[in-house]
Amino acid sequence: MGVIVSNIYLIGPRACGKTTVGKLLAGYLKCDFYDSDAVLVERAGCDIAEYVARNGWDGFRDLEVAVLADLSGVENAVISCGGGIVVRDENFAVLRNGFTVYIKADVEVLAARLEADPAHGQRPSLTGKPLVEEIRDVLEAREDLYKGCASFIADGAAPVETVCEQILTSYRSFELEEK
Image (cartoon, rainbow, N blue to C red):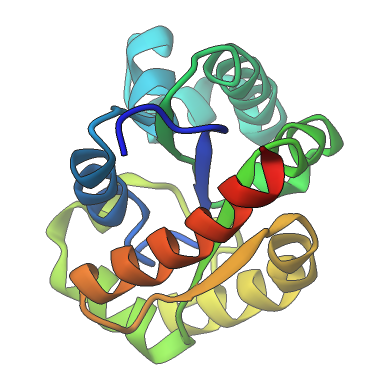
């Protein structure tokens, strides 16, 4: 499996495993991997917290739209998207145009991963609430959006290799339908 029919977009909340899964999946598929947050940071010239402090969340979301639009123009790629990518209609349209995987994990799994990762504080709070409350609120607000543009929902609590196998199995069915 060298060339993929459609880009694979990975969506879900932060700490669900999009980047980890994406890198491994791209290796399996022998294709390019892009992390939209990393591209955004490179383009902004600063980390996300600093960009949001300077430009607000609306400015951040505007840049996120531009980054996803650019990445949607590449071919043969796995693209890990920022957790809030689904909140803008422009992004929703792009995601519905490819093979989009929602990596779903529950609040406890996400909170444990964020607490174990010292870099989690680099992202500014969306709500100003304690971590578990924020995760719960954000998931509640975005769940229908994630599901609404997903071609497939993967179990983000499973081992990374298992998540990749789930995605590959579903993608192969999608690829056959596209031909």
